[in-house]
Length: 375
Image (cartoon, rainbow, N blue to C red; front, top):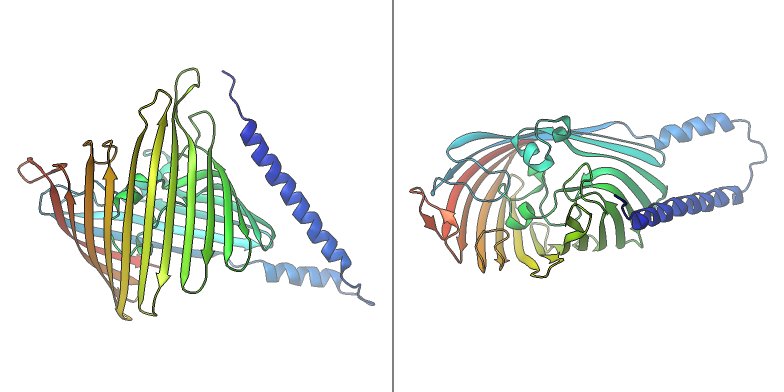
């Protein structure tokens, strides 16, 4: 079957030509510099410059585990807290990163239940790859990334140490986790940035649906504010003749506001629309507010309030459904260890949860205790 790869070829051609152009521009600037009258140590200077631009191999990572007691004896339908009344492993993660001049690489590897859910491909070595990519920066303002990397969409991330709450939101659980492909990041100024990318199927390391997904981001950031407008679109389903059955479009806004040294707010709003070839388009949307207050160097309080509108039952399984979740988490820091006692309650517009007697109910709540060691 013949597949239309025209858009893919255009993207790679533009990226290739841009890198050549930027490289030539940099060469011109180098040749315009004054020539030293006596330069008898050129080789030594090149070696010294190479050493200065080569970073050490950076190693970081974390391990986490948790215990959850659900008052319904049934866990929440969100990612990573999927057991009740059980001490449960999270993820063991190690990240290797190194930069040499204009190029660099990141190998972000993980094992454990959390990694298997996030990375997919259970039972294969691909399930251990959370990120694996190379970078090339022809100029300080331009970086190309090729490989498997975390999504630009959403507020929360896979790594437990980076979230103020241990349990995850509905938006995170139903949004992209990662992409595999090529992206280009541009620093438009000291505060504004942009990204464009072409990817395989969402949350896939190997492309299966013909055609590619396209992503983009516009951003503004300074010492106090960060605002990111994100977009992702592509074919989600085709028939045996490669005719498009479903195309997804997601628009996402993420923002952070550091109001004082101790108090910060975060905002996330997203909408996902599935355009069907035979009509009857489906969609869901959500919004969340995050607050974190550092009461001391050793304790930070984190609060999340999230609302999901699910008219087509894509998330909750009930038409015209909705859910509100409220989560309050303590972050107790003991050196490299963070302890997180957490209480969460979800309330839905319909009976979409199940209680201890396996009877449908409109609410669910739980206590969670998590421990994270980061290095």
